Image (cartoon, rainbow, N blue to C red; front, side, top):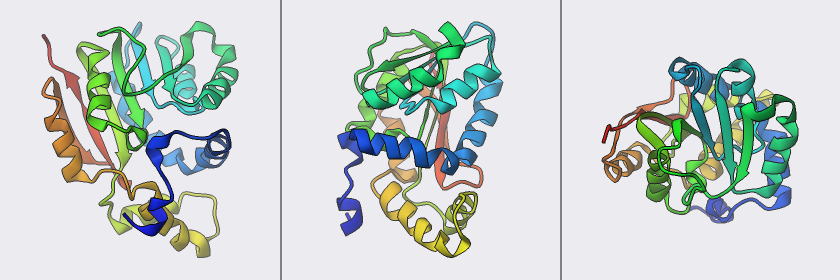
Length: 228
């Protein structure tokens, strides 16, 4: 563990200040990730589906998904009460189509088989027990239910980091600094592809593939829960 990454414990949960800064600063930074997620999640949507966003933060993506697809219902789950409060304020105009629940990804407050689609965007690195969190994602899926999970790749390629940082609204001269920040702080304690493969081996009831994100410094697990 490097000196800088040792200063950050992503599994400890956000303080109120940290959750505020994340919500204010990261929306623009995650725009390309959200676009990638929308492109991959949308084909799996159908009328009446119940969808779960694990680690929803301030709810921006869940709300965007519910706005674009009024035929589904979306529930966002996050450990931070401050983020859940923000998400509820943002989603107030959508009625019952989107709701937000405070809870832990490794011990979800939902029944088994409750959802048709579960997705998570960059949340897994915050889970203190990643295998347990992934098993929880699968547990709350019904048989054949879809899972789409993406996370920053600790072994990310330089060109993908550069392309990702280039989408941020920062001066070009500062991009090398933010590239280093991303590699050391953001994904320094995340998983690389080999770690993610080992994680998948611990959840045999999930039939999934693992691939690098398209042009992003991320990897993606995509698949479905095996029929019982």
